[in-house]
Image (cartoon, rainbow, N blue to C red):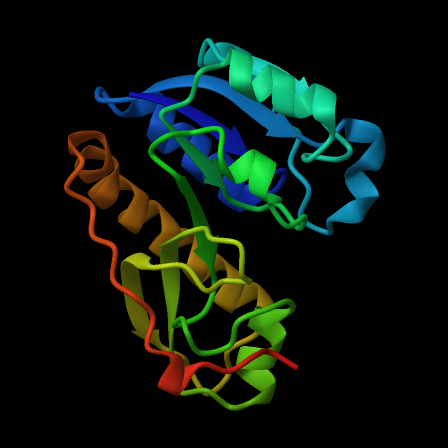
Amino acid sequence: MRAVLIGAVESTRIALRVLAEAPEWELAAVVTLPPDLAARHSDFVDLGDETLAAGAKLIHAPNGNAPDVLAQIRDARPDVMFVIGWSQLCKPEMLGIAAGGAIGYHPAPLPHLRGRAVIPWTILLDQRVTAGSLFWIDEGVDSGPLVAQHYFHLAADETAQSLYDRHMEALEAMMRDVAPKLAAGTAPRIVQDERYASSSG
């Protein structure tokens, strides 16, 4: 199976490493921000060296939905796209490229706390339990069917950094578990229950 990965932060690097190591996957390309736009993310990671070491094409993209970027993604012929650690919404033209769909990660127990700035809001709302969610990206915001969720408790003295680190651990565990299932076509599509939907902020 061929994958294209889109993102520019630590969670993207985790996904890159898992896909590069997975025997079922060929990482064809990584779409990421150019280093001169690093200020867009406080946790920006330069993925250039690891992308090239994985044998994948490096695509620098200020705008992931730009026509020239979409053309390069098409040329990579992905079966599945992974959009992890990317703040821009995927427009329908991008979502239509990979026949197998697109997978995203959200640091909350979807459908609860959809949207931005979820990690600080999890703490501000005094959530005692949270989860990381892998989901199929649709044209909504964090609303697509779930692939996997990893639940864990929050400590009383949890900080944004400690919670961020725990989400990175959850993401890696889920990616290693679902990568072979996605390649085999057996990954679940669990429709989110809108009765429990909420937004951060």
